[in-house]
Image (tube, rainbow, N blue to C red):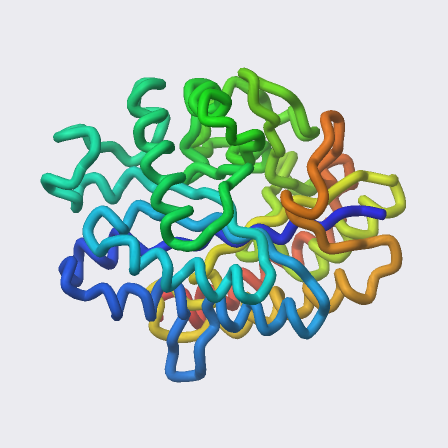
Length: 322
């Protein structure tokens, strides 16, 4: 069986909070977590409905940093429905919130966009605070982490080891110029122990220019389905796919993006209907050293990838500025 890890980076938008003001928590929640649009909600509630329809468990990497300005209750509003519906909650962290935190900033005046901009001890302090806050909001003790913007480095992995968080999933070999600074290459696509932490790379597929990362906005349903079939046929242990709480919305987060929404729905259906695939989480199936996490070895299919490019162009034209 190929284990499918459907991971959802679940986060309030610090950019929206900065533009709308820190008083606008409910609107930021609606546009980042709930996915409220005039066509209906397409955030985590919708995503969990779709997963429930197809017997899929999700991994929700939840960012507790907004508690710096809104308190733990703002994080409990995110965590509690996920836990109630039986999904896996793990730790996420966007340091951008430090700029809005004022006197609540645990590092004083230190700010930055990515974790790799901080020392190991500073990262340890942030991660420890975030883990405690996530648990205070109702989550079990996290065993896995993903950095906001994938912006981790080797010091992040050492800090995670010191905290007892066993897994990281910030290495993204399918993005050539990502914010990740972990000292692994784009050829490192299997689960590996690095700096004392087990690194679970984000999946990727073979594409026009080498690899393309396995994210719902980055791949067509045809590519994701082909990647899953390849993993099953080649007896790959897992397919690690990324989405976001707001990913099924248009860029301004006021309308649904039907093309991306339908990709998500179709892929969940494909996982449920494909023999040899099984939905898993960090809690239900521990990644093992040596597990392949994607389909980078799958030869690029020009027609399939070309169809995705055309679909992306259409989506950007119809929904990109909405």
